[in-house]
Image (cartoon, rainbow, N blue to C red; front, top):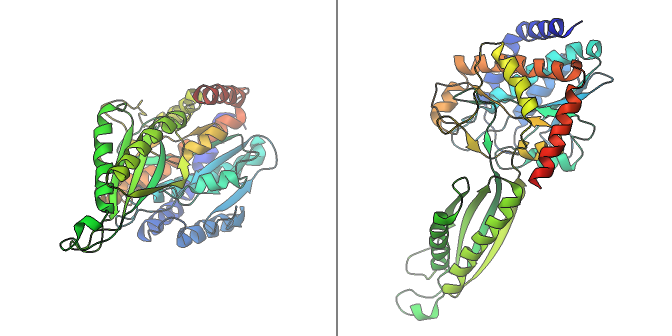
Length: 395
């Protein structure tokens, strides 16, 4: 079979399973599950893979809601990543049901022709993208050893070559002072809430003097018990983001100075707990992105380069994967233009007609990209070399 014939066969495999894939998407959407709690999605996806003849390891890599399936016996090994966790309160407002179903379709289509094409596909269930760092833990457990390239597709309000990813590290700041009666003996107290507020104000001032593509967000999670008790404990959670892992370290140091200064001014102590795992930025591999964009174009989708008029900014543990193997994270339109992810409006689209179209088109575009990597001589080597150069430049 030549490349065109393989892609035609892959499309047929996806079309034949269209009702199955959309049912999977809708069932995951109707049962949103948070980080590391995705038992319904895990079991559903594994059941489908096994029913389709894919050897699948459930609860893989030390995670109860991760899984891995394999097909093919030789040649390049391409990993298709499936996400399926949801957000608190607003369910699948990031459309991970689409990611799961599209990745499932791509993996099954690739598996159907793997031996003919002398290629391998790894279908990787990756839990807890929304802050839990499932892929980071899977990297540490060896999930990407022997993988030559990785891919996934993420829904949004537009077709884009990728997301504008930023590295992120979360910090929990816990302040401790001394309680006292706020009316009878305030002089005996050391107000931990004051310390947290002063730290917040310091960071607010810092925001004027950081790069436009850096971000710092914070919320108070504990501000004391009652107004007439000087708070002896307060807490705030912070997200610190920067375009690359290397630049993130410098920004973190400035944030630490702000938070510690607030504690010192209030006569309190602060404990900074940097929550694991942090997320890396996405390493760009333009040759790889070109493949996906061309395949999506063949389906009638115009995949744009993100710019100031249309982009999605965020953090993902797929960035960590991109430091290990060449990876892509394109965005596929699944909602009306301008609809932001992580909103109730987007959650509605994720199980609607545009979301369904994204499942099937995303599956085909990913599967065809797998075929390109398998069958175009020298292409994977060129992508690997470009990836190596990009990683070195970002260290």
